[in-house]
Image (cartoon, rainbow, N blue to C red; front, side, top):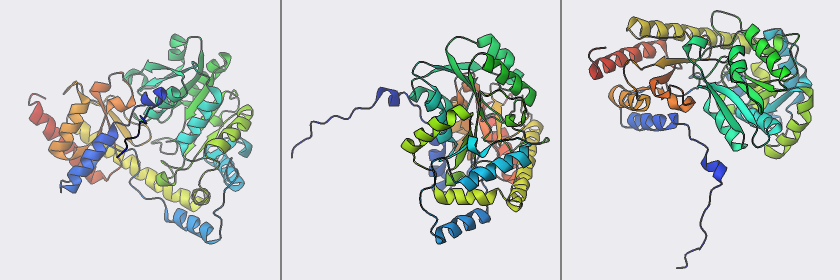
Length: 400
């Protein structure tokens, strides 16, 4: 038998891309589940609700009508118009349909945007902790990451003062998320506007992740795009996954200044041609009033879950530094119990069946002393999870 002389090689830049460490937790949780162990899943950032039935019906109806061909690269014109009206009614924001691009998930939107603006060596400033893909995309495009450590004193968020303190030549873009993954915290609108204005003076783009907008608690949902005097350096990334509950449909969008739209279209034509047609017809339906009413009921359920988890943990004696203001995450400093969040998460899973995410998925700063809890399960399960965590900590550290 002849042995091929071919030796596989991997691109150096691809070798630098890190995996999602939470997937190892999920894999072990699934294996334990298959073996009969009861698992409380608080590790994956995905709503536990299925997408709305009206979304399924709309997609199937479109398919039955033969509406399964490619759409324009920028997305269905009707969907872009619908999103423009959604911004007007939901956020009181004037957003032209021509500035909206529909993408196969929000990750594709961010990839497109960064590809459009970054040259090798350009710097991107973002918080540490932050959503892991943000760093990986910058690496993939051979940009340089400027990670700014943030803690509870700033709600784990960047602000204007931090931008001024850490400013350096060569920064092409600053990325923030409000609400944020993994912390659930927000940046106030006045602060966002201040940051946008400072960055415009520096000729720097401001990329705002609003993927969890809509999932806001004790206050109305807000978008930076509602500001009437917003500079034209702002780019917004959003998704039908979280608030709209359409994770597996893989549909997102970006809103960008006029100057970027032609290059975004060219890049989209080459990278994915168009987003899924059935998904776009489903998204058209989810923006109708009755569907939004159902999503509001789900938002209220997430708020109740947040309150249940937060107060149950406080009642159990756990020290919590911030109250999440949105999304469905709680970022927990566990330095009272361990300096090894990875080991803590795996031991907790194996001993109690509670699955949570270690902090190193989200950056380097204090990663070994933080974990993320997703309240994407029922209130009863959240209470049970807290009871199990309290007993686990008592067992490993009786003095706590």
